[in-house]
Every structure is written in structure tokens, then in C-alpha cells.
Image 1 (tube, rainbow, N blue to C red):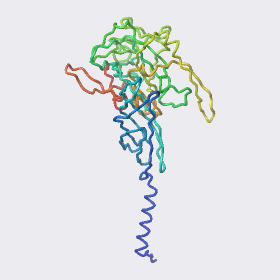
Image 2 (spheres, rainbow, N blue to C red; image 1 turned 120 degrees about the horizontal axis):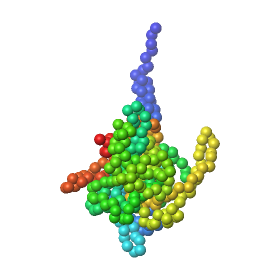
Image 3 (tube, rainbow, N blue to C red; image 1 turned 135 degrees about the vertical axis):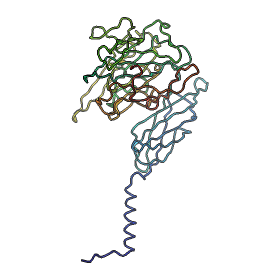
Image 4 (tube, helix red, strand yellow; image 1 turned 90 degrees about the horizontal axis):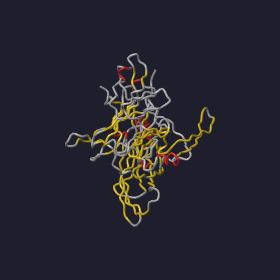
Length: 400
């Protein structure tokens, strides 16, 4: 049997045609002319940009494209893909005849960039410039007993004085988010750009100067301030915590030697899989006025099996201008969105790569140290991006 060979010129032409088709089918080589519009913060006039950096991170490849914005409109060529867009920088604006310089940021995840051209709009948010406490560590996962049972009473927060002056813990609020980072819904009204929706709010007691915290020092808020090793040898002793959450008329443990946090709204039941986020804030009004004026009623449609069910809830909100620090928590495989304004936090951190990951027990998220002062005190990293600022899945600092 004889096999006929194609003439050499036909072979070359066919190979060229196949290569051409291959290039046409390679979507990664396609580029999109993206127009990014940056919307100024509300109620600002005569806004001028200064040092505005824009980062486009392709979520599949990890490739980062950097650019600079000198006006509200930026044109950039990007390969087709799904992008995270981050904006950081400074603006100048006029108020009451005075020129003010402020720091702004923005963030948007899962921006699909396809086709010959595309347009995206991002709202800029003013960053808070107040120097105050930061959240140093959140131990939310709990531990496991030697028998493999879940143990949850040993959770805690570590709050750090990241300034060069004495700060007072008195009156500092801590709140857990109402919304979950693993369940994105269309909430109405959506107040996220102005306020944080809280499912639980607690406040440090004191008269204003009762609990001084020196520069570089920290205080601990424990779920239960007891020696947990008596009940679980794999746990820790939290009797030296500065404060504890305590719920009366519940099956809760109270250490009389440790001051109780005051509950403003609901009980602080810390989510042990990291589906929720946390903020610390200063209350500039009376507690009574807060409880009267800052309720938040919202609605959304829950879609299950193709059916839509109207849902609603009444909780409390905390204005973003009161908030001094925030951390978004999630699970790598389940993350859907950030539940704070980007001006507070435009990243997230985690313990556990999948839902119900048993390896998360006995691990915390801890803020990275930026530098150390001459007297050995830590200065912690705080860029309002928990992805960059926190180390995920680390050994709790209070675990001996």
C-alpha cells in the first residue's frame, strides 16, 4: 500500500493555516481597551488627583498591571480575563474655601473584561486618618480536644495600640458583621458605603481613663476568660485576658476577676468558620442615642431552587467615620465579597481553605509587624487591606 505525500508547498500552507487558527482561538492573547471611570466621593467639589495608583490583577494568572490616574478617566489595554481592581492615592478638594488633601481608595473584585472595549466605574472612598487601635489578632476557630471534639470557648481578640501615645480602651466598640463574606445578596437599602451593618455590638467599660494602653501594647478580649486547659489540654489559659464577653441568662461562664464587655446589641457569638467580619469603633454619642437612632432595616430576596423568597431583618449600623479598624474574614473556596467599604478594608484573610476544613482549628489570623521601635515595641502593618496586612492560618500568639 502506497501513501501519497502532499506537495511540499501544500504542507507549508496547511501548517501556516493551522497556526493561524490556533492564534485566533487563543483568548489569552486578546486585548480589551478598558475605560475606567473613578467617581469622586460624595459632596466634594473641585477635586484634583495626586498620586493615584491603579492595580489590575488578573484572577486566574495572577498577572498585575499597574497604571496611574491623573483624572477621573483612565484608559488601559488589558488581556481578556477576570480582574481585581484596586485604587490608592491622594486627592485635593475644596471645602469652605480651604484646600484639603485626603487619602482615597477603592476596590472591585471579579470584573469581567472581554471584547474589543469595556467600561467600568468605581466609587472612590475617603480613608480615615484617625490614629487609634488596630485589630492585631483574631482567634475565631476554636480548638479540638484530644478526642477530636470541637471546643469553642477559647476564642479571643487581641487589640493593639499602634500609635506613639497612650490610648484608652474605655468605650471602644467591637462589632461582628451582619452579612457574610460567603453569601452575596442584593440588600436594600445598601448602606455599605456609609455604614457597617452589625449583628452584635459590644463596648469596653470604663469612665474614659480607666484602662490605659501604652504605645505598642495590647489588650485581650476573651470569649471566656478561664483556664481552658482544664477542659481541653490542647487549648490555652485566658485568665489574664483584660475583658471577656459574658451573656447573662445563658449557659455562659463568668470570671469575676475579669471585667465584662458591655453588650449594646445582641450577644457576641463569634463565627468559628470565618464567614463574618469585624470592626472596632469609637462611639461619639451616648449609648442611648445610638440605640435609638442607628437601627438598620433591610430587605433582600432569597433565591432557593429557582424560587424567590422576600426576607428582611432589623439590626444596627455603625457609621464608617466612627470605625478605626476592620478585618474581613472568609474561606478561600467560599469567598464572594467584602462586607465593608473599601476605605475600611479592601482585602480579606482566612483560616481554612474549604468550608468545614478541620485543619483550621487551633489557628488564628495575625497582623504582620511592619517594624520595631528603639524600645522594642512593634509597629503593625496597616494598609487597610487585610490580604496584605494579616498572616493567615498561624499559631495563636496566646497558645503556650
